[in-house]
Length: 356
Image (cartoon, rainbow, N blue to C red; front, side, top):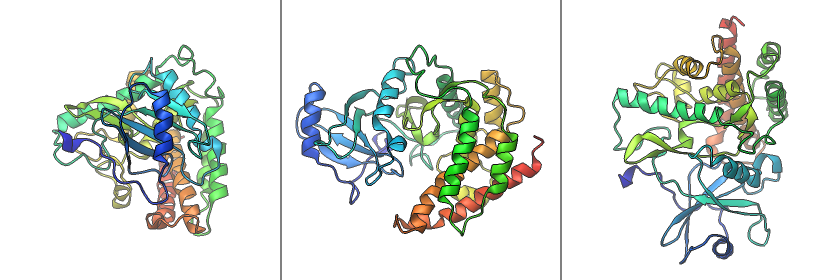
């Protein structure tokens, strides 16, 4: 089963850490941490960076903001750690936070260290060697959606998380905020999205359907599966965007990444999780299942679907803006402008068919 487990690799150039200082700090804050650690890094990292510190007797995970970023609100590591600590007793899929640090003598940025949940992370494709029948694939899919529903049903006030959001008006704040972020990151080779933004402003519900604790990036590649029982979810990762908000907005975000088997070739190229497999629910089936399980009214979900696609387009455009202006050299980002244009076309197509 070891070949199925998610693995770290060597640390990327320019993202090295001062291991001696970190080790000294951790040994004063985490009991029974002995020996000399080695340092590895996990793939990804367009947002916060994730490292693996391997001690002789245990592995721990370190999370820090990207190098060179100064926007504190976007990468507030201590907020993320506080959320995880508060949530853990009522939502046990959260990794245990072991230590937090905001000492510039140890590192140039705030960071936290958490336990490693060793298991399978379903990325673009399931790991080689993991073959699931259509029936098992469907059960895995339902199990993952159930974990999102379970999060939305957490008593956030009892968990001490009532101060982690701004209350009612979440939908309006998101539409205005993402519209503003798009306009600030627009480049001349990408469409204006004005028709999409106008539609979202005009069609947004007057009130949030509820206020609950939402993840804001709930995807298959943010869950950990039990290597001995790959249908079982044992961990949920990446809490940097978690907040109090509208649960249907959270589901809309999730569906933006949900590329299904009958989607066109361009959307298939953007797929980051194995939602194309035979047995996976379609987007409409996910919406229906979520509504049935929660009791929320989901009979016309167009607004939330289009919002999710627009938000994804803005995230892609923000990355592309840095590439376009020479702030990022990663050649993978060269196609992101085309991806943003494609997502606008998806939005416009859905808007044309919508009965809202």
